[in-house]
Image (cartoon, rainbow, N blue to C red):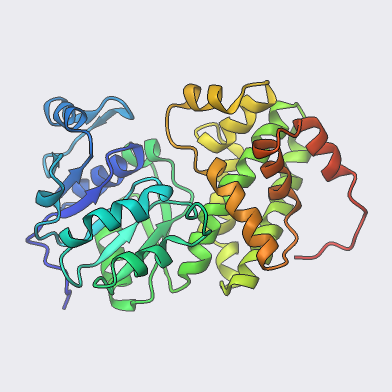
Length: 338
């Protein structure tokens, strides 16, 4: 018997493109959903227009999807909670609102990134700021919000240390054209979702410089090796990186211009400054903040991560992109290892 009370709505926190897409999917699957956003005027527009014109203008809200700007209302007694806010905002958001979360409520998140300054994974931040919530899970994989909202075929991984909660979430999410695979490797799933954003910046930059398909394939392959080496050092399961949350998400973000991180690399290759990139894209670009944390983790665990290192130097040390590429190409020939 499920421990989730499906007479209550699922609370989705975060009314950006990804949170909105997941709220649409869950309500389309037959669940009552309450979507919360922190901007009252924006949420008022969503309620009036029955779509998110700013982020997903063509996706009409199903009847079971309601919206609110009142966090207390959203967290009053939900079936379970899904958080989809930028990764760098987790600790301040949870610290400010921890008292609103019901005791032992199931909490999942769909954000990808590392905490700024500490390099901690989101599940570590959650454990520190919401100790009353023992049932937690992360969902990740090759998923563009627009395609999920359009009900195009999609597959994701849900990972949790609670087999029961993982299975319950999978049942709620798995519907129609949305397929869910379960995992117990929260470290690997979270790490894959974070590191791929950094590598997508590199792939976008390479394409922006006109380096072609050979270069892109090499970057993806050797980027996967960096991801796996860091995962080994941090206690992830190696096979996780060969699945949806690893190579699947990496291929997606490195090859399709729906990826904000890939577009960041493309724009920087054209000479855009970071300020101009942020203005052009207009949404959070997780890979920019994550690059610093990935490099710090690689140094901490004595892991070789040359691609991430060069992305970091371009972003934070003003290294010209062509020199970063020259550094990568100028590395000594070696035996291929993972």
